[in-house]
Image (cartoon, rainbow, N blue to C red; front, side, top):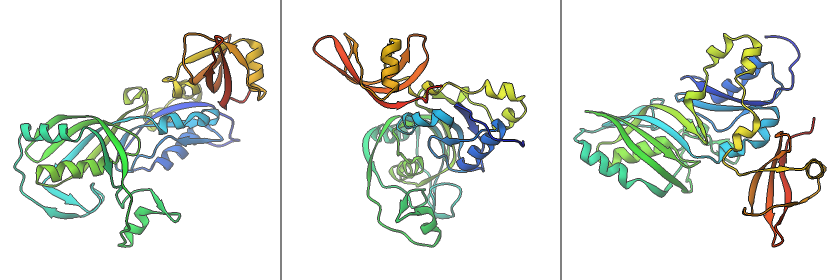
Length: 303
């Protein structure tokens, strides 16, 4: 597609296929919508598939809600083999016999639920002195990585067939499923690595809502644009408040209006005008006189 790039705002839910980087998906999406600006909301490894929300234009202001959100995955583990990267992109470095049953697998998965610390893998996009760790790993280097806290909210068996285990999981931001797969393999005593990984959800979005880029390309431009969700869809977990025209204008002008408010709590809110037009995100502080003060966090650019 050729021509001058244009301002496009919205959220595109892409079903990424295997073998392409998240950056490639962003570039392809921009081309298909002839858009000026776009970015993803959390990298998927090239070998992984599934849900990758792309934020265009003004929607990028609210991408942090997806970056911070819990994410769901379906992971396929090859039992009895460890790889150098924890997935199929590395070499098999160890092979062990597999002697597991459904009861033992269930016990292991249950033991991994909750808060825990994870050491990020060397084959990751985390940087040390500006250099991605995976580039250092390709040079045969391994450096110390500090563990970080993650939370495994759900971890259940989908299928167990001799040396292949498929699990569904919901995890906090920053969780590496490759590391989780390796932990499962070690606790089962046979080792494991990922052979497939599919992101099934992020925040309030589900992969069933997404579209492949091939399917998007087959649509006319108007129909492609119909695939875009509104920017406020990124923050639907936040409570909502509507402002009078005067208070809405005040907030957009950089002021901190005091608005009538009762029965709510101090928190971040999605803010709309009386007509239901999304203004942005603001921090609301409840006062004792049944009012609340608003301080803008991220606002849409007024038209």
